[in-house]
Amino acid sequence: MALQTLNPATVSRAPLPLARRHPPQPFPHLPPRRRVAGGGVRPRAAVAVAVSGAVNEARRRPPPQGGDGKETDLATLGNLCVDVVLSVPCLPPAQRDERLAYMEGLAASPPDQKYWEAGGNCNLAFAAARLGLRCSTLGHVGEEVYGKFLLDVLEAEGISVVGMLENADVTACRQAYETLLCWVLVDPFQRHGFCSRADFSKEPAFSWIRKLPAETKIAIHHSKILFSNGYAFDEFSPDVIASAIDCAIDAGTSVFFDPGPRGRSLLNGNRDEQRALEHALRLSDVLLLTSDEAESLTNIGNPIQAGQELLRRGTRTKWVVIKMGSKGSIMITESAVSCAPSFKIRVVDTVGCGDSFTAAIAFGFLHGLPAISTLALANAVGAATATGCGAGRNVAHLDKVLNLLRESDLNEEGKTWTKLIEGLSACPEVSVLSKTPVNGSSDRFVNVVPVSGVVSDLLSMLEVAPERSTVQA
Picture 1 (cartoon, one colour):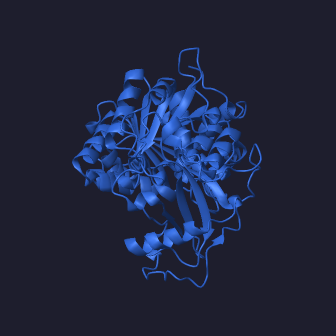
Picture 2 (picture 1 turned 90 degrees about the vertical axis):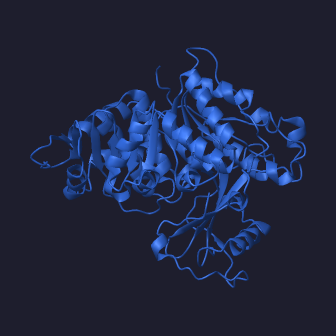
Picture 3 (picture 1 turned 180 degrees about the vertical axis):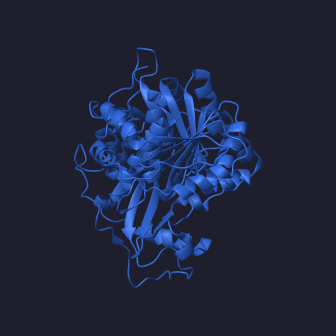
């Protein structure tokens, strides 16, 4: 969860004084906290997690049984955290020691619980559930008040939680078992900064998890998709992550991997990190990256060519999905390239958009949707989240997605796709979603896919499907 901003080029580099005249204020636009089931909260002091291995066990639901053994559509690995969203006069300093002191100052007097939100992979799980997928989260949640909050929120959203306490280390310090916090800081220009304790340790936050617990393996076996991203390396050892991928492959569970901003540092990390990254990139069924991330892993500037290179390197890879931000998205398969422009919206907050996008990619994968339809849906789900404020429970509901699809107001920039396509040396087929005809180059077939037909098919599927319905095997 390294410090990052949405507009890094415009962020002031001047260090923020540690003694601030203007303390951070709770972000004013978040909705009030839902009432926690069961009344009051437990004191933070009770952290005997390693001894009993049964923290909040009654709150964690085991994987469903029966049927074909794949009753869970999507399971996420790690990255379970609580976001604390604050409005600040300026973003944290870049220098490590000053940033650590800044974060410790925030933690010394945490704001009211109504400014907490479920973060990390919870965003993906929420968005997927609102598309009708059954989801579970695999990871560690502590016993303290933050952990109780996170479990309450996940339970209310119908997300099951499978803990990873089987290999607890009784010698580990108390902090090692606490729920991860991510401070989401918003300046007056609506730029975001993120920081957590994982940024300041050379070891993963949950390094006491030395092997994949048996319950986690069972949950992976019961899932159709296992999703992991680069942030999992902030919590688990490379061996644990690689073991989860191997477990999924053995179980016939599809693997989704998004290296995220951590991809570059993992590529230049220690031998174990490099090996685990290569393992994930090579063995995943679906890879999801931004165009910048794809370039950093391949040294290829054209995102389509970079995706083709990642596809060639993979031994199981079926889809490489490139997120192009406000321009839209691209999917590269062995036989085709599909391009879908974004939807025109008024952007309020982009936090959680990538997670929402991924949820729709999973939906399309499980339902066997055409590539262009999957991208159109993913663009709509990501855009719908961007029209709201914040992530967590604020990711878009299905009604917002349906409205965007009905409007079908594409942000078409024909030159964007034409330039990328003309840079290709070879491509069997190119499809572009459009309201208007797109002229391809003379030596290349470009299939213009009318958005009206794609939207009609998506609406007929989504309008009759209630949220959290299970995908049929």
